[in-house]
Image (cartoon, rainbow, N blue to C red):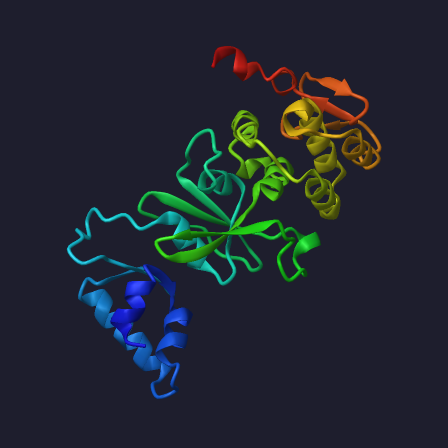
Length: 268
């Protein structure tokens, strides 16, 4: 495949993707592929975002103002990158507000970096799911600028931000964003949260579903399954804030009043 043809089909790509396409016939060396990319970077046709990651500059675009799609960048930082947490909510159109941080799941450690004012943060797939071929499932494919990327769907994203709220933007942002989701496969939600192996997350998910049981058509069987797996002793809903709150014995959770009452709704 000619480099120009590849660039036209791949607005963002990794070096290994280009090398595989360029060496398809086995007639050229990896060093030659690297040299070609360097030439295109020097000519202003490519942007070397970081080692092994490139973005194409469209013909006529101003390199000082052109913005590379940050979701595509995150999807290509590492092989099998998965857009997740608040970034998944943004990509799926459910985030209450936008963020200047893109969060994605990987199976290997990747150092955080910043590009064009956006922070890119890799989060390891939870240990309980790391050995599964699909990183735990609950993924959907999206397309941007002709390229496919993987993102956690509504069900998994709901559980993930409740499991790791630091990647969800805070409780108000999490609540407001999740409340924009109109339907989820509750059987998947229950199965997935149990697979994570965290009693605290089970209780958080159970509380959220109970609080929104009418909107999400939550059945008693879903809540009963979760209630059977809550913490064995009272636990703080947010371990970083242990002042005040109310104990809900059915979930063994001490929940902050602002979350319990959705206090932010009173001033919206």
